[in-house]
Image 1 (cartoon, rainbow, N blue to C red):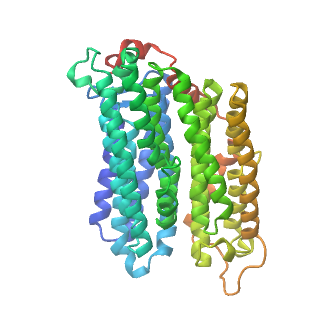
Image 2: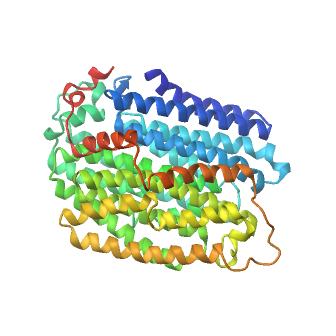
Image 3: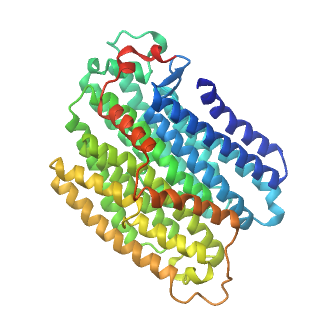
Length: 502
């Protein structure tokens, strides 16, 4: 098990370096696809092992995976595989043939390092390493956002780097405050920033310092998670990055930052009144949702619309956790998965459309069902799923979160969410039907841009449809175990300490 976790860290590093030094674009594509497939397979084995027993750790907790981390690991590598498949077709079309061998190696090098940093973020039990890995995601993904080396992409990359660097500084200060809040706990020096040891004795933390520390954590990691009002990097970075990178930013990176918040939320929840923490999350969640609703309605750029939609859905997830209770947290985790799948699909669709129509302006994209039948169908299905139409997966998790909100007595917040969802539904359906139907502009070619991009869309459509009807037992088990960790349900391993997991 520990060997498999070490392999997960080694494979992207080795794959990325090989892609960088091999100057053949087609070879780099195959190497990257092989590495992504291996990592995804290992993540399934890791998740299966964890859900059958207890968490696994090594190096005094530097490497640690429980059900919560295993879920985020699985999500990261599932989407990484889909994005690797999509990248083959998309990058062949977006780069000149003469540039493929020159630039593809560098692209896959950065992509694999980006994936590596996110794997590290969800497989470490050390709060310091967690911060380092999330900071590293910023540095590496900046290179991907500015990959095309154009004025707009470089501007977006710098904006992303500066805003997220400031945010992550807040997270560092919050981590430091958590350390000072734990000084009265008799740790061994090596366990000072060990999340699992701190969690065991979290009721001994200094409450005053913990309150302030969590605010800094929420602002810091919330910046990377795309919470309003720290979200200003998100539309530019998502719209200017290569489409596979946009999918990775929205589907995975935002969730890794949320994972960081959840780890500190669990610690603080054992020391502070739950209402304090939940109200903070509700405030950021509702603010994100309301701001996103307004901007979604006025967007003309398809990728910017999807970026603001990510802001909306991160707000819904934060609200679900803020509502508290088993159903609220379960719904939030379910929504993490659902949004990641649907948003990645929609970015894939947007990439196909932008290449075929040579624009991201939705007013100039018409008749997608006629010009690109498979992509046009995926556009309609993905848009309906994103808008929360039954029987797609997002509808199920949104219903769970709204039910938790009303049952917990948060009537006003729940009503705001409901109204926002109705408005966003109308806006997204209007945009998507206009792009799918009507007469296509003259001179637009016919047919799909590449078989690989269609395959990637098809892979994501399957779970999007299935999860709207049925939650497989293994996923339900993962969600239930993760809910227990987040809500503070103690298990034997938490009472005994991480030394029992080696």
